[in-house]
Amino acid sequence: MNVGILTFHFSDNYGAALQAYALRRWMTEQGHAARFIDYRPAHIERGGKLSLPTSPARLKANLKVVYLAVSSFLNEHFGHRGQKDKFVRFRERFLGVQRGAAATDNRASLAAAQACDLIVAGSDQIWSPSQHHGFDANYFLAFAQPFKARKISYAASFGRDHVSPSQAAQLPDLLHHFDAISVREASGVALVEKAIGHKPANVPDPTLLLGDYAELTDRAPSDLREPYVFCYGLRSPDNIRQTADLVSQQLGCPILSPHNPHRRWLEIGRTVHPDPGEWVALVKDASFVVTNSFHGTVFALLFKKPFIVAGLTGDKATANARALNLLRAVGLEHRFAPSFSAEHTQALMVQPIDWDGVHQRLAEMRATGSAFLRAQLQAVDK
Image (cartoon, rainbow, N blue to C red; front, side):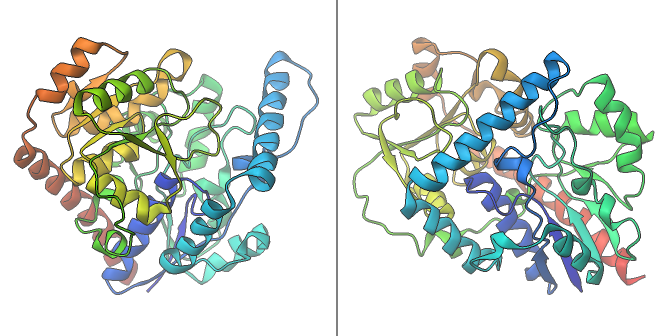
């Protein structure tokens, strides 16, 4: 059958690209034709429209719009061109998204989804309300209400534990037309249950549905012969820099850190510019992984890499929820370091990980996610 997937497939972000790849690949492996609904709203990465600054909140929202617009401009005109081209080629080869599709009309892309038998909203933080735009109703499939297609979410994330009272009040209307809802985090279960009166399914991120990434790693260049620490940091260098530096010193090997176009801090170790497949290979071949990213944590688990999740600090600490939920699910919450401690870092480096137990839990999560999706596909046939 024809499956339409609505997610952040267009972002030059490793986690976004890999979760999109994994969900599409799972669908195609079941024999279905899966494609991305090519919706690319300006507010996600380019800021969108300014509003009249009639309140402190709107002024703050305008500042976020300006920040995103400036960041997008700088990345477009002064960013690493080789890395941008790598993402384009990855999307062409592994996501089925053709070069030049950025000019696609959003209305036409959404309307074309009516030809689908099943429309999936997810995964990633598609339900995260932004400071400057709030919820985007299209990611709740509002545009598809008149369509005959079955409408579901798979592992959708709010990206946080709580939303504001005004945002919570919007959720019943946004969620009521779904045929089935699943979310990625336990905190999302609570938010949806409060909104619609019953619990949604709690399923793993699509990247955990796949047990084999050889399609990506086998094609990646293997010119790195010496051991290295893989450091993947987002949002802030606090904690992760000190942790990675200490791990590097203890192991006597360099740090490799993928380029982040939104980085506003000095590089950590040596900056590299992989495509998403090469990024996976870098995790696979690393001696140790230090990250503050959910997907950095996912692939450290999949490839049985010793790792530390160096938590985000200050007002960014709310973004730790996703990685913490995953660590709790596999019994490794002690691998989370909320702040830097040399003693704690050294203790974690020598502490063994029960990989058999971890992968048993991952297998159970994979079975849960696959069962949910199979049930939704079967429901279309009825």
